Length: 95
Image 1: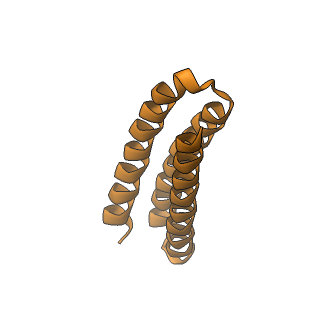
Image 2: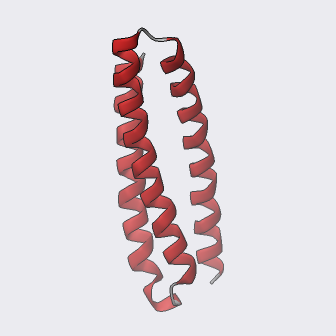
């Protein structure tokens, strides 16, 4: 149970970090020319979708019995990597 709380806290901190990145991308998108703006917002939307998947899986973990926690942690870590990858791609394309 204590491990679940630690992991949950770690994921919540990462979610805050991702939100900071999204805010930066939104600011950049706001000042971009119209064509680039559309592209930037599509990238942002992709990040938001993947981030939402992490939030959903985290909510499921919090309700999961302790004997299934490893399964949820594994799924969350896979999703975490996906979000990191898409954010890195966005950094490359937006900057």
